[in-house]
Amino acid sequence: MPPATLPDGRPWVSSAAGSDGSHASAPSVVVRVSIDGEKTPGGTEPAYVGPSGTVGAPILFSVKAQTEVEVVVVNHDTGPHTFDAPTLGLDVAIPADATTTFRFHTPGPGTYQWYCDVPCGPWVMSHVGYMKGEVMVVS
Image (cartoon, rainbow, N blue to C red):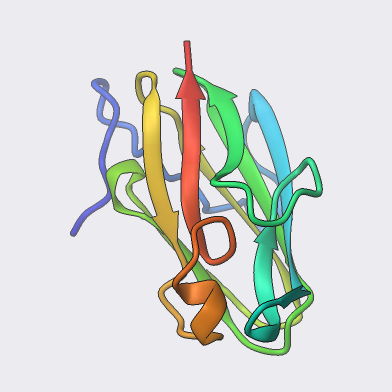
């Protein structure tokens, strides 16, 4: 599925950086999240941790509508993950032990589902707020 576009044809996802790692323009918002080993009823499993440091929250982060968002994911896990949000046009590979940065433009207000598509722990894969959740876009 090709990524969704804005009315002017620009993609919502613009993860390509220049050869020096810079982007053409600064994003409106930078959101930092991490993937850390967390104690769960299923044992210690990897989980997405939002900017507030809260684990298990259904909303990973909240951003304003019609802005360019840069997401920085620091994966402290030894396994790869993904950040998939089909309605936002996102299908981002998150390599093991690495930092991954990607950008997208927010659509109108709403709640958008995201998930990791790499099975990494039975408990975290089946509970909202760990390897799946929501991004809230507000007006």
